[in-house]
Length: 140
Image (cartoon, rainbow, N blue to C red; front, side):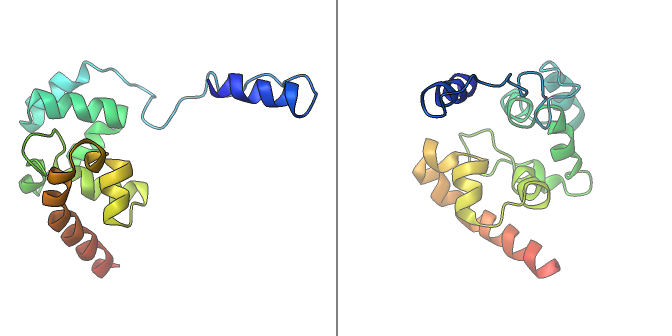
């Protein structure tokens, strides 16, 4: 879709022939070495639900294991942020440390998308996310 849009702009706005698309074969972060079936190994190794393991693979790709490594000495990060959704607490920490998330809104709206799915659950998640953000910024 993006390629089609750029091609259309070249044709109609710039009145030029579109340049060849260079992004078609570029891998996104987490795509290298991705195998969706790795969710089974992650579920077994870390003791998380099938739903959470599949969610992590879809969201973070081959970096799902990096999210879970944050729980090595902090098992509480394996728990769900809120019941009824697959998001675990380690994701919030990963978003802050690795994806430069710096506000509650950023995490709830863009990183997790929880507020878009369930506003009530997002409200329940706010205290944990706020606490985690505050703790991380105090450490800097």
